[in-house]
Length: 409
Image (cartoon, one colour):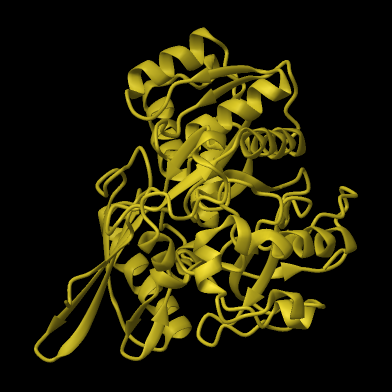
C-alpha cells in the first residue's frame, strides 16, 4: 500500500460510521481507531454484493440526499437491484479516471469515439461519454443495438475509436466483413469491457476491424467502467490507485494471498463520497502484477481476468471457468472463438457438451472435435462432448454473451 493510499483510507475510516448507516451497522462491534496498519485493515470483514442488495434502495448513501446528484444500478438481472448514489465529486472523479483510460489507449481530442454500451441505470455508456468529453474528443453516443445505424454512423462520421462489449464488437466485425465495408471504416482503436474474452476472439476482432484492442475494467459498485485499462504495451491492466485500493484474497477463505498469487479482487474506494465501499468483493479473479511496466506508469497492475468466482461451475469434482474453454479453443486449429457449454445430468452422471464454431469443411470437423476434446481432457482431466457448428450458428449479443448453461438444477 502506498503512503497516500493509507492516508486516504485512514481518513475514510475516521468518518465512515458517522456518514454511512450501512457501515455503522456493519462495524458496530469494531473500534475503527484500532485499525493502525495494513495488517489491521486486512482484518476488517469483506463487503459482499448481497449486503448491498439488503441496503436497497438508498441505504448505501453516505451523504445527505441533497448531495446525491445521480444514481446508478448494477446490470444484474436477478435479485434486488444494487443502487449506488453519486455526488458531483464522484462523477467528476470518474470522468478523470475515464479520460486517463482513453489517454493510456493513445486516444486524443482528434478522435471520434463511438459509444455502443447501454445508457440509463447501467454505468457504461454515460461513463464512456463523460471521459471522451473531458478528453475533448468527439463523442458519438449510439448506445446498443441497431447495427445498421451503427455502421452508417461509423462510416459517415469517420469513427476512429469503438467502445463496446467484446460480444458486440465481434458482431460488428462480422457484419463489416460480410458487407465488405472494411475499406470505408476508419477505426484504429477499440476499448472493450464488461465481459471476459479469449485470445481467439481478440484476434478475430482486431483482424476484422483493423484495430488495436484495449481491455477496460470496472464495475458499477466501484464507480463503473474506467477504473483501469491496459496500456500501449498490451500487458496487465493499470488500476487507478489514487482512487481505489486493490487486494487479492482467497475466494474461499477471504484471506489475503501472497504477492503474485491469483485470487479474487477486493477493492476499497477511499475517495468516493456517495457510497464508499471498504474491502468490496468484486468476484473477479486475477492477480496483482509486480515489477515496472515499460510505459513508465507506477499504478497498480492486475492481470487480465481469469473469470468470476460466481461464474465457476463444478463438473465431476472439477472447478470450470470460461477461461478454461477459451484456452482450449486457442490451441485447437480450425476452432473459432465462439462457443457455448451445456451441462446436463443424464442417467446418473454429468454430461458436458462444448459447441464451438468453425469455418472448416464438414469432412474435417470430426478431427477438430477430437482435438478439442483431447485438449480439454488434458486440461480438466475429464471427457466432454465436442460439437462443431457453422460460423454464426451460436447466438450473438449486443451486450454480454452467456457462455455456460448448467441444466442440472
